[in-house]
Image 1 (cartoon, rainbow, N blue to C red):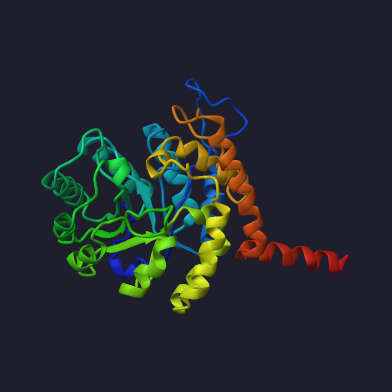
Image 2: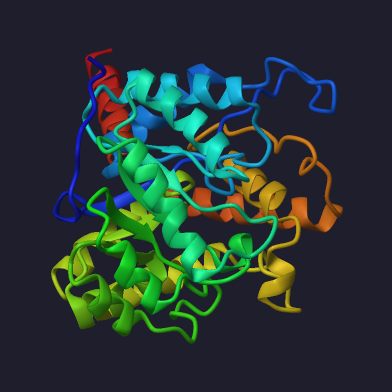
Length: 348
């Protein structure tokens, strides 16, 4: 029998890491590229994220190469991460596809390699109606009742938000335990939406996780004890420092940390607005993560491997500022490595 873990919303706490997919840097990445994944780095990245405080890992979001991996590649990546994690935290595999049948095929493979659950958006070629969204998730939950579902509510990717009415219906599906909730990353405030109404609609059955910039809001208003974060993959130190501040209700300290994180991101977001941020964000952010030096994620895969040079430059600049953040907010594995080096130096 395949080993799986059934989770509930109460099991989702702390920082859920949205991990990038490591791509090789020793080959040419173009339309002919094969054997592109750096699976050793994927295993190392998952391990170090957990050691530095991540309480769960979601695979194949935007910077996890969701649109660019073949079926075989995405299964290989999931297997490598699941084996590295070794049940220390839940792993939510990237189950978003363009249709229900492909999602079922993918989930069946994920269950075979031992994933605990699914990081699951929805088909996006055409915006889905409320009833179609509910039926899509219901179909997957009924097909795989032993797999937990982590909703992926990205307004831009999926062409519309999940409405309060739909959240109320999705909360009736016990497999759905959490959600990567939509946020305005630039301003660090929830988009003009219905977060409070959505929280009441799910009634604790689905944990609606905001981005770290918005954690103070969700914690202050609803005592939210968890977030999703892709930033942890470039600088885990400030994320964990923010967690300590938020859970201690020290919102003033959390604001100082958030301001430092915004400094690190200066110049990354086009002045023309959030819509233009979404253009070429995959190569920009993978460049940033790689430059930060924490995870060697390599370049974006086709067709997202090409972009205006200024986007790559912005990513590199932000990555260099992330390196400064490592010094100000050293993460656990960095402190351990420095301590080990001092011990060796003293012994010598």
